[in-house]
Image 1 (cartoon, rainbow, N blue to C red):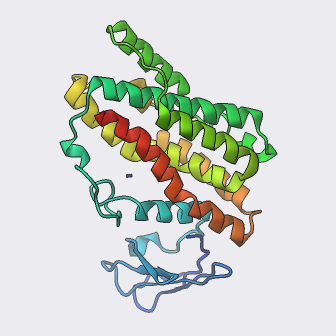
Image 2 (spheres, rainbow, N blue to C red):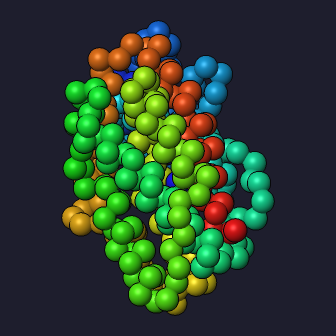
Image 3 (cartoon, rainbow, N blue to C red):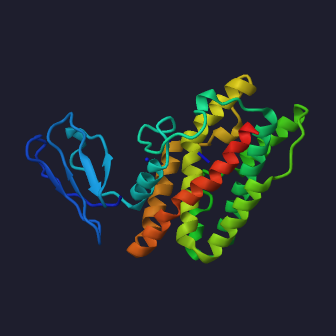
Length: 274
């Protein structure tokens, strides 16, 4: 589900902070990519598979730490965002931008109910841990099921009828169950995109809906206990650690699943306008 809402490589940098002739040589087996910069205000360019990603950097950031597989996941996800969703987005917008949405209470409740089903399913999968390393992602602090339960109870107290889960949520929950048993790399792709998208674009959408429908009330769905940035970093590190044992083919397979994760989440998100 989508706030803006962002390739794995190791880098060596000269210890001198001078801006002239700074070269980073990086390796991403079996691919290679090169990072270069000419001056402090320039935007260095990462080139991989004839695709170009622009990133910002300053001299004070040198030397850079080695990046992990999560950086690859983020790069692929950003390509599927539109510019109104993320400044790094590259996809052409379809339909109205979020700022012009006209949500309904009924549609928003459908969205919350289907979202809860998806998060309930993730919790159940991770608790059962069909693969032992799934347990690494249990109780990360990003879980949303309890928060959504509180929000739906609040709507009920306001006199609203809570709908049953609909087709988009049911289909996605079933797909996640199947992936978790048979395709763990693809499953982790969905896990990453569901949780991380909600903390970025998801919060932005929640704020817009609250402005239009809820007199700016902030739901529990958009609140976390503790430092959210640290919670996200903890999960990034866990994904990087787990993926260290994956082959390049398995990593690529995980990345290829990103578009499906956007498709399923997008179908649930569009319920807001129903």
